[in-house]
Image 1 (cartoon, one colour):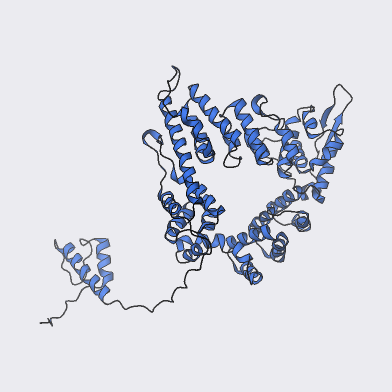
Image 2: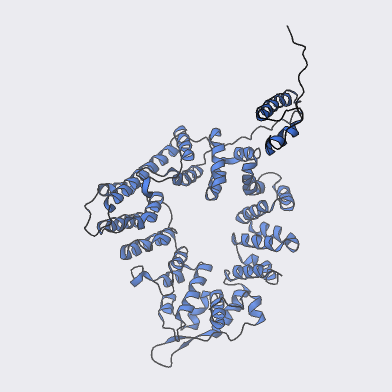
Length: 538
């Protein structure tokens, strides 16, 4: 039998919310009696009102049916590798008690290498891994290029359905996908006119990597209407594919109303040793530097500029020096670093770069001159000058004539071929140990070449036997886990046991070293297995 009793009325929902926020001792909804029972009555009324609101909800208009996910023509990653990917995506960084990491590999740090290997082999991800993959890329910007490349077209399709993943659309939708295939020209023009700033930057970078002239023409067409901060970022994109063909556009940018844009244009022009700006800077530098043969052995003499004229400022010289820096040395350093390195041989008696950097420099100008040459070698990607300025890795303090800091040495090394770079760093480590090698190791190609890997393992072993404070080498250990060739694992077998500790060693150092070497060995074995899984047939 169905009841026909009327449903009791309830106070409006807004009144109930107000009473709950203010408290029933201060506010009682209409229809509810005040007193001790008021809180319970309020909750009962809210429960009734909630049921009514849900029961009375009218269905909305059906949404548009989603377009199906696009096909991904790449072969799916092998099953074992897919399971490994799930484990890596689920991994969490952490340390054991006391800050010690234990002997288990850090799965989070292995994910970038797994993605790079999978992309190199042209695999597609398992669909069920895409949400976790996009979450990982959202959390770690260093993962994004490889993660989004691996996610492919289906990853972009999925990212369009979740606002949390919209970064993927901004990062990739304006990139290589827009620059290829039928109708790419119209897609590029529309995206350049209508896209978000990040999409336009990505588009310009993608075009510059494929068709540098097309990217430059795209930028030229809207340059006058772009905001200053946008012009700076767009101009920086021209580093990709930079050539003499970009010189006319960059020369015009030297008159830009933004000082930072002018400075960036000047820097790009000085990376082109045959550009008109580099020639002008070279002429200024030759006036400042000469060879004195009058007294004793030949020596370099520097006469810094006495003023920063408007022509120098137009060519990118910043007139006002930083606090504590002399004006003339500040101007000279900028001129010398922007001059083509090829001018110095004729100016300094036909000498080679090695002979030039070996010349004495009068009046304490040596540091300023050599530091400028270092910056020029990096900017112009001149390996011969970089080699001369680095000097021998076994030299005292491993300092080349112009290498005034480890960061500067690292930049010079980056101009060398990968094999030569690894050999130089291996020589550095063999002569000076690992205490200052971290930055240098960071510019070496992965996996490390065999001589470099052996040098690192040997230096770690020496540090352990010397009773060195072990935690100071944790950074190098972390690099070794990611960069050491798994083929070097056998060299670690004799280092896995806890050694006898010297009397002057840090307490517990031996067990820490053993633990660190065990983790390194396990990580290398895991990396080898990962590579095998990705090489297997799906």
